[in-house]
Image (tube, rainbow, N blue to C red; front, top):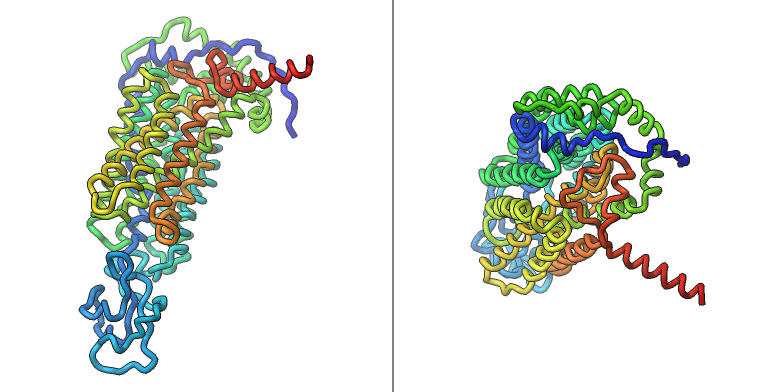
Length: 560
């Protein structure tokens, strides 16, 4: 039950961390101790996160034709293929064959062995290569079982992010990073010994269930270690590291090693980030939110000393016993998080909008990553190019963020990416360079949007609940990532351009929702629910303007 809370503190005590970090501690070795390990962790996440696209890579197939396939290692394109297998577009069908003639003859493989008026589904397959789990578990032409591989990972991530958020807010950011990294590494390594499709899916699911959230926790820790002026730069560094890891993953996968070896190559390095508990400095904001004021004070003194600075007397006084008492009193009266969210209407609105942004961002980003290995050209280079183009997208946002603000860039990024997705549909076949340019340009804009979404949604939430709410948004956003593996099937079974219509539509809708949120350029991070609820109160708001006009109109009707 939600209990009514009484606010006992009229004014929040004045530990102004943004001012302390910016003016008294500055940037130096202390921030590097947080950013460098977290950047490496982000690289390792990017290096492994979409590994199933290569361990369970789609491979070209055709039907096994008993009447003609007499070799121990049948060729994918034998000379007689046109007699036995129908065309599908510009190539031979991967999943169907002509039916056997009612009275077939023996001898040379020729057209009289087949009824070319009847097409039937394959019962056995010939694979282009045997390095993918698709071969080991016989997944040829089984879109649904392939879809389950990707979607099970998404479901595991969605559940895990809430667990990770709780661990992060309860035991600290470092503990959450160590917990998720170690679990993600060792459980996924177990996939190496998977001898069935069910075991393969289960290992992947459990790896995400107990290991997803490494990047989110690292990102929050980095943002909380820098002042408001450098939050976007910090977020961009994290996104850049992740993009580099993803690009390297594509290049490593191009070696076309057996999928079991790729599992080890992708996941063993994650044990490195599991050791960061003993390297990373804990978040000062988290320590204060947990009433560990003395530890926070010692850490800030050490941070200033590391950067060759000294804290002022006024800053040291702000860590008085009175502040400890008042913060503790405020903590006791916080109440249930769900009740607090519903009590603060502005925070509630942001908690409704932010998950929709995440659904859109993850659906488009992961959908584009998945389709990149299916579009024409080299699948590995396409995948790496889609990852690398994110880097200039991220830094373009960083360059303009302090000039234009959060909202214009977020709206422009969503809509520009959506326009590129829809424009891709109208490019005639054969214009590979133009279609690839539009594809990469759409990814360019969405990369900036994704980084800004990380930063912006974190800035809208109070410190005490930031990790929990941020991971909640991200976990709900996994709905988009859950649907993303379906895009190849939608393109095959419904319409080849349907995924791009969905990408564009989601991007345009999400851009509209940005109009309902406040601009917080230069604002300090909200520490309490009251701070978060008051964000943008002095700014014009489309929603507030609409509801005010509606209320006034109803008042005038009642007076009449």
